[in-house]
Length: 337
Image (cartoon, rainbow, N blue to C red; front, top):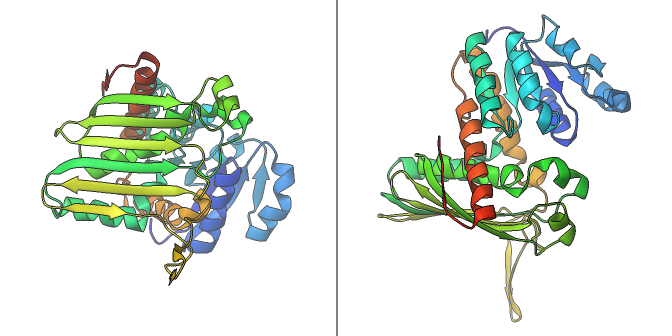
Protein backbone atom coordinates (compact mmCIF):
# COMPACT_ATOMS: atom_id res chain seq x y z
CA UNK A 1 0.00 0.00 0.00
CA UNK A 2 3.01 2.27 0.40
CA UNK A 3 3.10 3.12 -3.32
CA UNK A 4 -0.49 4.33 -3.54
CA UNK A 5 -1.90 7.60 -2.34
CA UNK A 6 -3.38 7.27 1.13
CA UNK A 7 -6.63 9.24 1.30
CA UNK A 8 -7.48 10.66 4.71
CA UNK A 9 -10.57 12.31 6.15
CA UNK A 10 -10.73 14.38 9.34
CA UNK A 11 -13.84 14.40 11.51
CA UNK A 12 -13.92 17.50 13.67
CA UNK A 13 -12.09 20.66 12.66
CA UNK A 14 -11.53 22.37 15.96
CA UNK A 15 -8.09 23.45 17.11
CA UNK A 16 -6.52 19.98 17.06
CA UNK A 17 -8.30 18.85 13.90
CA UNK A 18 -7.06 21.89 11.99
CA UNK A 19 -3.54 21.34 13.32
CA UNK A 20 -3.51 17.75 12.04
CA UNK A 21 -4.93 18.88 8.70
CA UNK A 22 -2.21 21.48 8.21
CA UNK A 23 0.49 18.97 9.18
CA UNK A 24 -0.85 16.31 6.81
CA UNK A 25 -0.91 18.72 3.90
CA UNK A 26 2.57 20.11 4.53
CA UNK A 27 4.59 17.19 5.92
CA UNK A 28 3.78 13.88 4.22
CA UNK A 29 4.26 12.36 0.78
CA UNK A 30 1.83 9.90 -0.84
CA UNK A 31 -0.93 11.19 1.44
CA UNK A 32 -3.95 13.26 0.49
CA UNK A 33 -6.32 15.01 2.87
CA UNK A 34 -9.47 14.56 0.83
CA UNK A 35 -12.31 15.52 3.18
CA UNK A 36 -13.03 17.34 6.42
CA UNK A 37 -16.25 17.15 8.39
CA UNK A 38 -17.38 19.67 10.96
CA UNK A 39 -20.75 20.96 12.16
CA UNK A 40 -19.59 24.50 11.36
CA UNK A 41 -18.00 23.63 8.03
CA UNK A 42 -19.36 26.74 6.31
CA UNK A 43 -16.93 28.81 8.38
CA UNK A 44 -13.97 26.76 7.16
CA UNK A 45 -14.11 27.34 3.40
CA UNK A 46 -11.24 29.82 3.14
CA UNK A 47 -9.08 27.65 5.38
CA UNK A 48 -9.93 24.49 3.39
CA UNK A 49 -9.24 26.23 0.08
CA UNK A 50 -5.83 27.34 1.33
CA UNK A 51 -4.95 23.68 2.01
CA UNK A 52 -6.45 22.30 -1.18
CA UNK A 53 -9.04 20.19 0.64
CA UNK A 54 -11.60 18.97 -1.89
CA UNK A 55 -14.59 18.25 0.31
CA UNK A 56 -16.11 20.01 3.30
CA UNK A 57 -19.23 18.56 4.88
CA UNK A 58 -21.35 18.86 7.99
CA UNK A 59 -22.07 15.11 7.98
CA UNK A 60 -19.19 12.82 8.95
CA UNK A 61 -21.09 9.95 7.37
CA UNK A 62 -20.09 11.37 4.00
CA UNK A 63 -16.47 10.58 4.87
CA UNK A 64 -17.23 7.09 6.13
CA UNK A 65 -19.29 6.33 3.02
CA UNK A 66 -16.54 7.44 0.65
CA UNK A 67 -14.85 4.28 -0.71
CA UNK A 68 -11.73 6.25 -1.64
CA UNK A 69 -10.97 7.27 1.93
CA UNK A 70 -8.61 4.85 3.66
CA UNK A 71 -8.29 6.40 7.11
CA UNK A 72 -9.95 8.93 9.39
CA UNK A 73 -8.81 11.14 12.23
CA UNK A 74 -11.46 11.46 14.94
CA UNK A 75 -10.99 14.94 16.40
CA UNK A 76 -14.61 15.60 17.33
CA UNK A 77 -15.91 16.20 20.90
CA UNK A 78 -15.00 13.45 23.38
CA UNK A 79 -18.52 12.10 23.76
CA UNK A 80 -18.53 11.20 20.05
CA UNK A 81 -15.13 9.47 19.87
CA UNK A 82 -16.26 5.91 20.57
CA UNK A 83 -19.33 6.01 18.34
CA UNK A 84 -17.48 7.45 15.37
CA UNK A 85 -14.51 5.11 15.87
CA UNK A 86 -16.83 2.10 15.80
CA UNK A 87 -18.62 3.33 12.70
CA UNK A 88 -15.30 4.08 11.00
CA UNK A 89 -13.86 0.63 11.81
CA UNK A 90 -17.05 -1.04 10.59
CA UNK A 91 -16.66 0.93 7.35
CA UNK A 92 -13.15 -0.48 6.96
CA UNK A 93 -11.32 2.76 7.74
CA UNK A 94 -8.13 2.95 9.74
CA UNK A 95 -8.69 5.17 12.78
CA UNK A 96 -6.64 7.74 14.64
CA UNK A 97 -8.67 8.82 17.69
CA UNK A 98 -7.86 11.72 19.96
CA UNK A 99 -7.85 10.98 23.69
CA UNK A 100 -9.79 9.84 25.54
CA UNK A 101 -11.48 7.21 23.38
CA UNK A 102 -14.33 7.36 25.88
CA UNK A 103 -14.78 7.92 29.61
CA UNK A 104 -16.44 4.51 30.01
CA UNK A 105 -14.00 1.56 29.91
CA UNK A 106 -16.69 -0.82 28.66
CA UNK A 107 -17.33 1.48 25.74
CA UNK A 108 -13.61 1.51 24.91
CA UNK A 109 -13.56 -2.29 25.03
CA UNK A 110 -16.46 -2.27 22.56
CA UNK A 111 -14.43 -0.04 20.23
CA UNK A 112 -11.49 -2.42 20.44
CA UNK A 113 -13.69 -5.38 19.52
CA UNK A 114 -14.89 -3.61 16.38
CA UNK A 115 -11.34 -2.57 15.50
CA UNK A 116 -10.05 -6.13 15.90
CA UNK A 117 -12.91 -7.57 13.86
CA UNK A 118 -12.33 -5.06 11.07
CA UNK A 119 -8.56 -5.61 11.09
CA UNK A 120 -7.80 -1.89 10.86
CA UNK A 121 -5.09 0.22 12.48
CA UNK A 122 -6.27 2.05 15.60
CA UNK A 123 -4.04 4.69 17.20
CA UNK A 124 -4.81 6.93 20.19
CA UNK A 125 -3.60 10.53 20.31
CA UNK A 126 -1.08 10.46 23.14
CA UNK A 127 1.35 12.74 21.35
CA UNK A 128 3.85 13.16 24.19
CA UNK A 129 5.33 9.73 23.48
CA UNK A 130 6.58 11.20 20.20
CA UNK A 131 8.38 14.18 21.74
CA UNK A 132 12.03 13.72 20.78
CA UNK A 133 13.33 14.52 24.27
CA UNK A 134 10.87 12.24 26.05
CA UNK A 135 11.63 9.48 23.55
CA UNK A 136 15.35 9.91 24.25
CA UNK A 137 14.62 9.49 27.96
CA UNK A 138 12.52 6.41 27.19
CA UNK A 139 15.32 4.87 25.10
CA UNK A 140 17.85 5.66 27.83
CA UNK A 141 15.71 3.79 30.36
CA UNK A 142 15.10 0.84 28.01
CA UNK A 143 18.86 0.56 27.39
CA UNK A 144 19.32 0.02 31.12
CA UNK A 145 21.40 3.14 31.68
CA UNK A 146 19.47 4.19 34.80
CA UNK A 147 19.29 0.61 36.11
CA UNK A 148 16.22 -0.61 37.96
CA UNK A 149 13.61 2.15 38.09
CA UNK A 150 12.89 3.48 41.57
CA UNK A 151 11.05 6.78 41.06
CA UNK A 152 9.42 8.50 38.07
CA UNK A 153 8.45 12.13 38.47
CA UNK A 154 6.33 14.14 36.02
CA UNK A 155 5.49 17.83 36.34
CA UNK A 156 2.71 19.05 34.05
CA UNK A 157 1.33 22.57 34.51
CA UNK A 158 -0.71 24.60 32.06
CA UNK A 159 -0.10 28.33 31.55
CA UNK A 160 -3.79 29.17 32.02
CA UNK A 161 -6.97 27.30 32.96
CA UNK A 162 -9.48 26.29 30.28
CA UNK A 163 -12.84 28.01 29.90
CA UNK A 164 -15.81 27.04 32.09
CA UNK A 165 -17.51 25.70 28.95
CA UNK A 166 -14.61 23.32 28.40
CA UNK A 167 -14.45 22.26 32.06
CA UNK A 168 -18.12 21.21 31.88
CA UNK A 169 -17.43 18.59 29.20
CA UNK A 170 -13.80 17.70 29.92
CA UNK A 171 -14.42 14.83 32.30
CA UNK A 172 -12.36 16.49 35.02
CA UNK A 173 -8.66 17.15 35.46
CA UNK A 174 -7.66 13.49 35.75
CA UNK A 175 -9.47 12.46 32.56
CA UNK A 176 -8.55 15.57 30.58
CA UNK A 177 -5.10 16.71 31.71
CA UNK A 178 -3.45 14.08 33.91
CA UNK A 179 -4.41 11.32 31.46
CA UNK A 180 -1.40 12.33 29.34
CA UNK A 181 0.82 11.93 32.40
CA UNK A 182 -0.68 8.52 33.19
CA UNK A 183 0.20 7.39 29.68
CA UNK A 184 3.73 8.78 30.00
CA UNK A 185 4.15 7.00 33.33
CA UNK A 186 3.25 3.63 31.76
CA UNK A 187 5.46 4.39 28.77
CA UNK A 188 8.52 5.26 30.86
CA UNK A 189 8.02 2.53 33.47
CA UNK A 190 7.47 -0.26 30.96
CA UNK A 191 4.97 -1.90 33.29
CA UNK A 192 1.49 -1.34 34.67
CA UNK A 193 0.16 0.80 37.51
CA UNK A 194 -1.35 -1.20 40.38
CA UNK A 195 -2.45 1.50 42.83
CA UNK A 196 -3.24 5.22 42.81
CA UNK A 197 -3.49 7.85 45.52
CA UNK A 198 -4.61 11.35 44.51
CA UNK A 199 -5.07 14.64 46.33
CA UNK A 200 -6.36 17.89 44.89
CA UNK A 201 -7.53 21.42 45.57
CA UNK A 202 -9.09 24.45 43.93
CA UNK A 203 -6.37 27.10 44.16
CA UNK A 204 -6.44 28.80 40.75
CA UNK A 205 -10.04 29.55 39.83
CA UNK A 206 -13.03 29.06 42.13
CA UNK A 207 -15.29 28.65 39.08
CA UNK A 208 -13.57 25.33 38.39
CA UNK A 209 -14.54 24.17 41.88
CA UNK A 210 -18.11 25.36 41.39
CA UNK A 211 -18.26 23.14 38.31
CA UNK A 212 -17.21 20.11 40.36
CA UNK A 213 -13.56 19.93 39.32
CA UNK A 214 -10.15 20.80 40.79
CA UNK A 215 -7.29 22.80 39.32
CA UNK A 216 -4.34 21.56 41.39
CA UNK A 217 -3.47 17.90 41.91
CA UNK A 218 -0.79 15.50 43.09
CA UNK A 219 -0.90 11.78 42.30
CA UNK A 220 1.23 8.92 43.63
CA UNK A 221 1.32 5.72 41.57
CA UNK A 222 2.61 2.27 42.48
CA UNK A 223 3.86 -0.02 39.70
CA UNK A 224 4.05 -3.78 39.30
CA UNK A 225 7.83 -3.70 39.72
CA UNK A 226 7.63 -1.74 42.99
CA UNK A 227 8.61 1.61 41.48
CA UNK A 228 6.80 4.77 42.52
CA UNK A 229 5.47 7.50 40.22
CA UNK A 230 4.76 11.08 41.31
CA UNK A 231 2.72 13.53 39.20
CA UNK A 232 2.01 17.15 40.02
CA UNK A 233 -0.49 19.20 38.01
CA UNK A 234 -1.67 22.78 37.98
CA UNK A 235 -4.03 24.53 35.62
CA UNK A 236 -1.99 27.74 35.88
CA UNK A 237 1.76 28.27 35.90
CA UNK A 238 2.39 31.99 35.46
CA UNK A 239 5.75 31.41 33.75
CA UNK A 240 4.48 29.19 30.92
CA UNK A 241 3.79 25.60 29.94
CA UNK A 242 5.75 23.52 32.45
CA UNK A 243 6.57 20.01 31.19
CA UNK A 244 9.33 18.06 32.94
CA UNK A 245 10.15 14.42 33.61
CA UNK A 246 12.68 12.52 35.69
CA UNK A 247 13.40 8.80 35.89
CA UNK A 248 15.61 7.82 38.83
CA UNK A 249 17.07 4.33 39.16
CA UNK A 250 19.74 2.16 40.71
CA UNK A 251 22.43 3.28 38.23
CA UNK A 252 21.52 6.90 37.61
CA UNK A 253 18.89 9.41 36.62
CA UNK A 254 17.62 10.86 33.33
CA UNK A 255 15.76 14.18 33.23
CA UNK A 256 14.03 16.28 30.60
CA UNK A 257 13.64 19.98 31.30
CA UNK A 258 11.37 22.57 29.74
CA UNK A 259 11.81 23.70 26.16
CA UNK A 260 12.47 27.40 25.62
CA UNK A 261 12.68 29.50 22.47
CA UNK A 262 16.46 29.47 22.77
CA UNK A 263 19.20 28.04 25.00
CA UNK A 264 20.85 31.43 25.45
CA UNK A 265 21.54 32.29 29.09
CA UNK A 266 22.62 35.76 30.23
CA UNK A 267 24.82 36.05 33.29
CA UNK A 268 25.50 39.52 34.65
CA UNK A 269 25.99 41.31 37.96
CA UNK A 270 22.28 41.18 38.75
CA UNK A 271 21.82 37.46 38.18
CA UNK A 272 21.55 34.66 35.64
CA UNK A 273 18.72 34.92 33.11
CA UNK A 274 17.19 32.44 30.71
CA UNK A 275 13.95 32.39 28.74
CA UNK A 276 10.66 31.13 30.10
CA UNK A 277 9.19 27.84 28.85
CA UNK A 278 7.15 27.88 25.67
CA UNK A 279 3.70 29.14 26.53
CA UNK A 280 1.26 26.97 24.58
CA UNK A 281 1.02 23.20 24.13
CA UNK A 282 0.78 23.54 20.35
CA UNK A 283 4.15 25.29 20.39
CA UNK A 284 5.76 22.93 22.90
CA UNK A 285 4.63 19.75 21.18
CA UNK A 286 4.47 20.90 17.56
CA UNK A 287 7.02 18.34 16.38
CA UNK A 288 5.41 15.48 18.32
CA UNK A 289 2.05 16.08 16.64
CA UNK A 290 3.75 15.75 13.25
CA UNK A 291 5.59 12.58 14.23
CA UNK A 292 2.53 10.85 15.72
CA UNK A 293 0.52 11.25 12.51
CA UNK A 294 3.58 10.11 10.58
CA UNK A 295 3.58 6.93 12.65
CA UNK A 296 -0.14 6.41 12.01
CA UNK A 297 0.47 6.70 8.27
CA UNK A 298 3.51 4.42 8.49
CA UNK A 299 1.53 1.81 10.43
CA UNK A 300 -1.10 1.73 7.69
CA UNK A 301 1.34 1.63 4.81
CA UNK A 302 3.59 -1.02 6.38
CA UNK A 303 0.90 -3.04 8.15
CA UNK A 304 2.40 -2.71 11.63
CA UNK A 305 1.00 -1.92 15.06
CA UNK A 306 1.22 1.72 16.19
CA UNK A 307 3.20 2.73 19.28
CA UNK A 308 0.01 3.89 21.03
CA UNK A 309 -2.85 1.45 20.54
CA UNK A 310 -6.34 1.06 21.91
CA UNK A 311 -5.20 -0.81 25.02
CA UNK A 312 -3.06 2.19 25.96
CA UNK A 313 -6.13 4.37 25.66
CA UNK A 314 -8.09 1.98 27.88
CA UNK A 315 -5.46 1.68 30.62
CA UNK A 316 -5.01 5.43 30.94
CA UNK A 317 -8.75 5.89 31.42
CA UNK A 318 -8.80 3.17 34.10
CA UNK A 319 -5.99 4.94 35.96
CA UNK A 320 -7.80 8.28 35.64
CA UNK A 321 -10.96 6.73 37.10
CA UNK A 322 -8.97 5.30 40.01
CA UNK A 323 -7.39 8.71 40.63
CA UNK A 324 -10.79 10.39 40.76
CA UNK A 325 -12.10 7.75 43.17
CA UNK A 326 -9.03 8.19 45.36
CA UNK A 327 -9.48 11.96 45.42
CA UNK A 328 -13.14 11.61 46.39
CA UNK A 329 -12.56 8.98 49.09
CA UNK A 330 -9.16 10.09 50.37
CA UNK A 331 -7.89 6.50 50.08
CA UNK A 332 -5.55 4.61 47.76
CA UNK A 333 -7.38 2.77 44.98
CA UNK A 334 -6.30 -0.41 43.22
CA UNK A 335 -6.27 -0.24 39.43
CA UNK A 336 -8.21 -3.13 37.94
CA UNK A 337 -6.90 -3.67 34.42
